[in-house]
Image 1 (tube, rainbow, N blue to C red):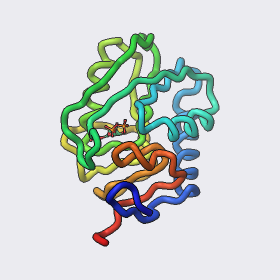
Image 2: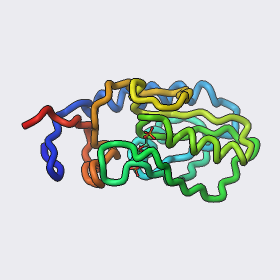
Image 3: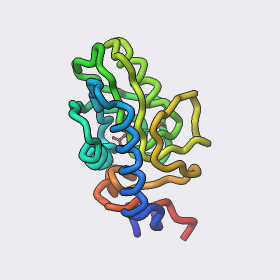
Image 4: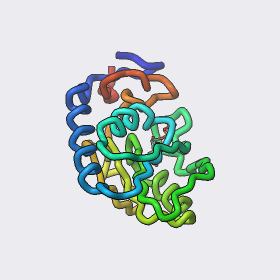
Length: 177
Ligand code: PRP
């Protein structure tokens, strides 16, 4: 499968993804029973994952959105994280940040620091994909769907230069063609 100048091969099927989402939602449902839960979706990449995850969480919860960008149109984090944090009322609430992928960890560490200023009761991260070998900062990710090696992936919300987000599976950059 081709996007722009690159070729991709199937990496995670719809079933693999569905299973990871359901398992994570079960953990969140168990851990936050009786809490005032606010799910914060980190756009853009997380929009599809978040839509599936929140529908599988069997608790009343608020869903809020904010945006963060660090990749531009390249395949590597620029290391320069641009965030837009709207005025979200999370003071005293239990927050789960919903993220499609944790790579270097820079985006979420910047976001967490910004959101701590609003004094939530707790704040955890729920990430569908984690690439632990790529971390540049220490970051605790409470809920991880699938750990993968450092391969570039697209699909299920993730893009390559803004294309590929609508693919229902996750695809990895293929070896040279
Ligand atoms: C991706 C992804 C995370 C971040 C993870 O966003 O959605 O937010 O990168 O990388 P990091 O752990 O190295 O910081 P991107 O900047 O591509 O923006 P997008 O979600 O709008 O595509």
